Length: 165
Image (cartoon, rainbow, N blue to C red):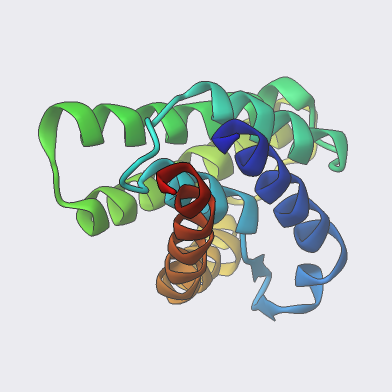
């Protein structure tokens, strides 16, 4: 049941990220809602963090993007794997793990994208990309982290309630 809910949440986040959220920009950066939903769902108490959700999230975003699917699958899987590793082995503090995974995941996706654009003869200056895209995206992601975390926590409680009854 939890996997099904996670897939529905990722699908809904992908749809919102493709349709509504491109209108919300800070410089050239925009919110990565799929990454936020993925990481906050993985950090819920009753859920076991699983890096394979990163593959699914990357595939969903890759299908709706002009970037190659494998590129985004690698970025989201790296973020999910880091979240899983930090949660199980190092930190039990959810918010610190969530913020660290979000920062590293955003940087990983953006660096992979920049590398792909550089290799495909569409070079973007690293300073411009970092200042105009990556930093604003990080800021928007950090601003929306707590509201998305609260929303996902409530959804997780609703899913867990029928199982406990």
